[in-house]
Amino acid sequence: MSDKEPLFSKKNLQLLSDPLNSSNPITVQVLGICSALAVTAQLKPSVVMSLSVVAVLAFANVIISLLRNTIPNRIRIIVQLVVIAALVILVDQVLKAFVYDVSKQLSVFVGLIITNCIIMGRLEAFALGNKPWPSFLDGIGNAAGYGAILIIVGFVRELFGSGSIWGYKVIPASWYIENGGFYANNGMMILPPMALITVGIIIWVQRSRNRKLIED
Amino acid sequence: MKALRNFFEKTKPHVQKGAKYHWLHSTHDSFFTLAFVQKNTSKSGTHIHDYIDLKRTMGIVVLALVPALLMGMFNVGYQHFGALGQLETTGFFDIFLFGLLKVLPVIIVSYVVGLGIEFIFAQIRGHEVNEGFLVSGMLIPLVMPINTPLWMIGVATAFAVIIGKEVFGGTGMNIWNPALVARAFLFFAYPAQMSGDSVWISASGIGQMADGFTGATPMAEAALGNTDLNAWNAFIGLIPGSIGETSTLAILIGAAILILTGIGNWKIMLSTVLGGVFMGVLLNIFAVNAYMAMPFWEHLIIGGFAFGAVFMATDPVSAAQTEKGKWIYGFLIGVLAILIRVVNPAYPEGMMLAILLMNTFAPLIDHYIIQGNIKRRLKRVQQSA
Image 1 (cartoon, rainbow over the protein chains, first blue to last red):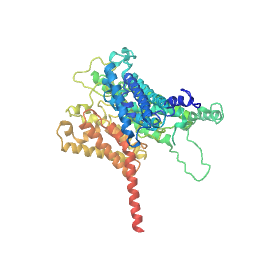
Image 2 (image 1 turned 135 degrees about the horizontal axis):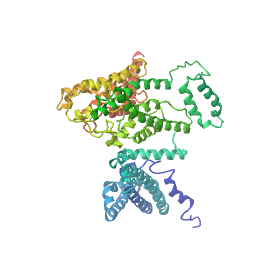
Image 3 (image 1 turned 60 degrees about the vertical axis):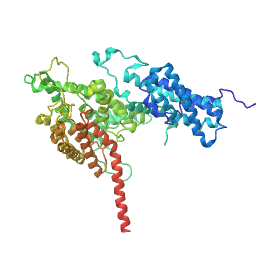
Image 4 (image 1 turned 90 degrees about the vertical axis):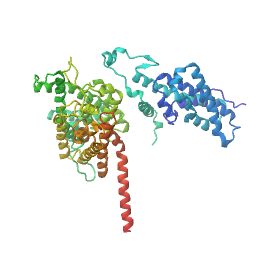
């Protein structure tokens, strides 16, 4: 084919980069909020959760895209769910095998990736109508957009809520009030409401930088 | 005064559109209108200009807060020397001076942080600086325990101004009372510094407390079943508590100022008290423990009930706007405050949560009052037609 486009054409690169900014799943499409609030109390689970979603979404997109011409339209949702569920179980088992403590922390939220709106949304909106390679990039891009927000929120919440990053204490122990200092961890950062407020602030900053996103 | 006016006149050309310091124009404006009454007149149509603008309204509220503030300062010293067991040997003036020096930094932090953020936002948005913070900046110190670290006051003030107010569009657009947002933020973020028995009394210089002295508030005592209350002290304000909330007498003076000038809404104050009395009597009737059996009127003089009813619930922005709605809004604040206080052991003070909750529901109350009014009038039209 003469009109075969290169693997990383401009259009394909946009599939990767758009979800990071102007069509971010969390801050613009407002999908997947539930898990973004629940697992981001610390950085480590946020990162693991992001990687899990990257794996699930990328491969689900590819598989559905490969099957797209054979799936009967009327039962497509069920087929999508089977594919996602199979991948989520795989991810869950891998997490249990290699990072058991984080998998304990994430508990039910790994299983709930199945119901994450971002995944169903991308399968419906993109994979069903596109070839495997663009679908793969789209999956990576959207999951990365989701993950980026999770990691920012997780970073902020762990730093101010627990005084640590990735489990390592970064605020000197002598600063704390118990040890005669002046500092105390912000207990509200541990609670989900503060995650919502943090996401809200990210949305605010993003929209004041990128004014096209402001709705009337 | 003349020199000040000359200064404003002289600097004015430099901040006008196109001039070098135009970016400072909202700062210039705000200081000018703070010092002088504006003489602007309308260019078209007939308008009546009242000298009572937002700045003067806010000024009167701050004035109404002064009795509670002074009494709070005195009480800070009184509790401190009481804890030391040195009340008899310390003069009135020394007691007050101690409180003054303790409270002043809190007020300064609150105003510097809050006004700083307000000015920054006004400059960025090109608005005039709003005066709403003049009252919030005074309310925030008054609802804090005296031992709260200053940086926490700063963080809470920043949170209240940015998240409580600016994200909604600034003064007049906020859903919740900013001062209560600041307090709620600290209450959930730093519970150890905001509740318990050791935060209400200024600790600096206390080696050992006098025998039998406890720093618990009357509410914390009552929650433990110890409902002996020196009602006169509670009314005058010589009990442990947040800086401005202890003296019911001083708050009543403030309430009188607000009601006489027509700035505070008496309906909200009255209905809040009625709600509190209603719930208190109800609990008295069905009392199964000592706290529930505590005479209903004592609820009105301990904790932040009076302060909340007079200065917080009546905040014209976050309260209900319809006349009927104000009764419902106030009444439910009173009911919820006493209910949370007595029934929920996790929250010794219910006033903050009750007001924030009803702030949230105020638009809903207004909506149904207005809808009801429209329906009633539609019916009348249909009947007469």
